[in-house]
Image (tube, rainbow, N blue to C red; front, side):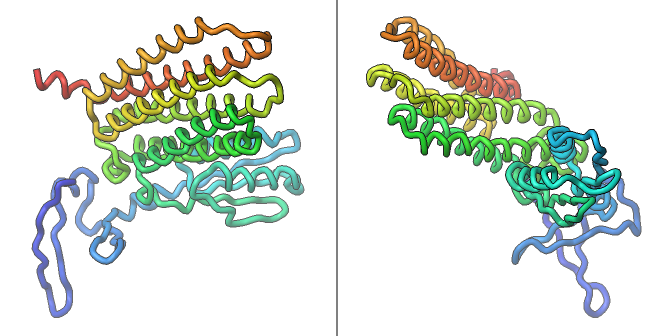
Length: 343
């Protein structure tokens, strides 16, 4: 199906054109004669065909009832959970009276900042409606993951530059970028959950096998954690205490650049489904981890505060390398059959 099948356009009656659809597709979706399908034009030369009953199934809505004891954090967690589960319409409704102004403010700001493709479509004293307007096929999982990866790499690079230059403004930009990474993370997890429940959407989302969804989820979590560690490093740049000496800083930046290169290799192996590339990335990441330990153990500093800062940053860098290795392991899990079939 994905490779394409040829069909002839035929004429019926005086003005109608018909094209037969693949039998396997019909059988997989359980379509019957007289079932209706939706035809949507996509650009100049393509159309998309979807059964109407499936379109209806995709429209899911839920209502969160806010009582007098409901906290803002609790309501926000509920909204994010429903978004991740694939709900299209989320209503936040007061059980009695009005919604608190602070709650409304946080809900609207959080939807805009964290939940990709959402808009507040209704806003009254006792109700807010958040609707997901982004179609599941508009941004594939791979493309979203690539953008998430680019953001995370930029965060780590800029965090170390901010630390080296004691640049508080750049550090704050890095910290703010963590929300954007979370935004992509939530979106990808939402897509994966939708894919698990609707296997026929896998190919349109850029996935080849249903059992890859869990591995992708763990890859996303690892990238998200790398961004968290970059944020932690950036927060150290806001500390006006003793600066790290130039030699130590250069070593840390050099090792971080190596880690970023291996992160690229791990993710390239994922996008290409390359088992050998994954194995190479794992070996390189583990080598960096060992060298990082040796380098840090060999350093000596004057003040306890400077020692703490260096150890803290070194620990974050080491853990980033471990997450990079984890990504390689996950890719190898998905692609190991390539090696077995070639032996």
